[in-house]
Every structure is written in C-alpha cells, then in structure tokens.
Amino acid sequence: MKIEANMCAPTRPALPVRLLGDSLAVSAMGYGAMGMSEFYGPSDDAASTALLQEVADRGVTLIDTADLYGKGHNELLIGDWLRSGRTAGMAGQIKIATKCGIERSAGTPALRRINNTPAYIRRCCEASLVRLGIDRIDLYYIHRVDPDVDIEDTMGCLAELVKEGKIKHAGLCEVSAKTLERAHRVHPVAALQTEYSLWSRDVEQDILPATKALGIGFVAYSPLGRGFLSGRLTDTASLDKGDFRRANPRFQDENMAHNLGLLETVRAVAASHAAAPGQVALAWLLAQGKHIVPIPGTRRSAYLQENLGALTLALTAADLKLLDQAMAPEQVRGARYTAEGMKGLNA
Image 1 (cartoon, one colour):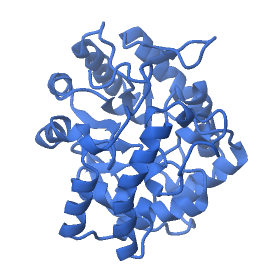
Image 2 (cartoon, one colour):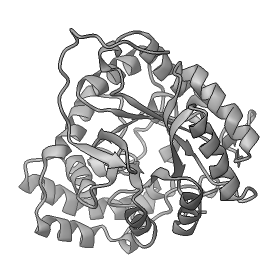
Image 3 (tube, one colour):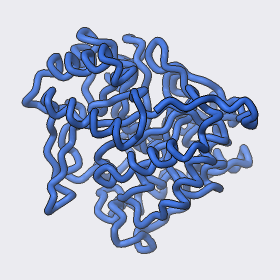
C-alpha cells in the first residue's frame, strides 16, 4: 500500500536522528508497541491507536512490533492505524520493525518453540506484510535464534527477502557476539535488538563492543526495566493479574526489595536535574553509544512525553560514573526472565 504525501500536513518535531547499520536513519528514540496487545494487562484499541498517532506526531519514526505480540493483534493494530490515512503526511518517515521466529503453544501461550527454518520465516513475513498492510517491512528481525538451524541459512533467507523487496533491512535479537559476526558475514545486519538498561547490562562485555566494531545498530528494548526504572513501581500487588511481571524473578519479594535500594541513586541524580528517574535511565542509555536507539513502550501520553524528554537531558561525567557504579550488573538481583523466557537468549 503506497501512501501519498499530504503537502498540507503539519510539521512534525525534529527529534535527533541515529543510524542503524549504514543506512537506516531513525529517531534517536523509537517506540515499542508490545504492551498495546498483551503482557502488561488489558488495553484498549482506540486508545492505543490515538497514542500511536501521538507517537508519530511527536517525531518518533521507529515503531517496533512482532508477530508474537497478541498473536498478530499488535501488527493488525498498527496496520489499521497505517491504513486509516492519518499518517498520509508522513510517507517514508515512519519505519516499521517487526519480528518472527517464535511459535507459541495454542493451548498454553506461555510455552513456545523457536523456529528459524526458511519456510517458516517466509510464511511469517508474508503474514506480517498482510497484517501491517504494507509492501515492504523496513526492519525485519529474527526474534530468537533456533539452535537447530544454522545462522547462515537463516541470514540467507533474509537476504533473499531483501532481494525480493519484501524487507529492506535485516536484524537479529538476543544473539551472542559470535553469532552476530557469523550472520553479518552472510548479509549485513542493520540492527541487533537486545534488552539493555541500567539494570540489564550483560551486553556490555562482548555484544555491545561487537555491534560497534561491525557498524551494527543496537536497539535497546525494555530500556526502563519494564517500568522499574521509572520509579513508579514499588511492588507487584497493584499489577493486573495478567501482568507478566508478577512472575518475573526481578520483581519477586526479596529481589524487588533489594533492587529498590539501588534505585535511590537514580532518584538522586534525577533530583539534581529536576528530572524523572526514567528520564535519567534513558539519558544514561543514550550516552552509551551513538548507535544505540532505545524503544520504551507506554500506553499513556504523559509517560510518552516524559520519555522523549530524556533526549534533551545531559548527564555529566560524574552522573554517569555514579550510575555505573550503583547499578553495576553484580548489584542487581534476579534473572531478567523465567526459565521459559530465557530460551534462545544470547545464542
């Protein structure tokens, strides 16, 4: 579906731009749409569509989704928004990133199987194109790596999809530095998407340096620690019963109590800048490399505005050092996923 530009469309704010790979230019902060479909309690499609429009109107150009989210619902939601004509004046500016590679059990959605076979990737790509209502996906990720499929075969399939014009850029999620290097030799990887935040820093040892060396963009998901780093969540009692954080190890009683103590340093730095803790967390992340693009997700306009405010927050060298020390990896308690959720990470 080709959208014609509307010459009378209002001017959008110009956010800072960062490059993923050698040619995918996006706003320095993207938007993660996952929570509009599941994992964080119930949501409303009309409200989600209105927020998507605000995301775009505020100058965010990278919107991230996956076929996994809501079993296609998230892509359909974004597709309906794109088809509505409300983005007609933004032709070529909005970049859609989606993913494939995880099959969920029909009877037990929490159970999943990693599938990177070329036939499955092709089938998923075609289905995503239909749900999104677009002719080409700007950035197509493999969501998790299948240990039973050679990464060379996986990347070969993505290279064919690029050649056929069905995707423009290829990406990977949650892979090791060695896997990333092998994949990049087959076809350029524009971006690696992996969890990265003040309390999830394991990528700093090998993976982040590899992206810098290879010229690969780094898209940081859960940059606010699934809401923890915003400072607004102090326990899980208030969370919806369907919120997956209720079972996440880091949010369990003793771990949560310990981790809240670490957050006090973030609060202190925020107070010194008259900023919110979440803004400090995002500003710290943005300072870790010019090729890093965080994709915080929210369902509230006020939080969207707060997140974007991090783009103008300049932390000092002393601030960064203090945060590095207080939130060092060994200080954080609890795994970032349950055992089931850890499947395919850093493979």
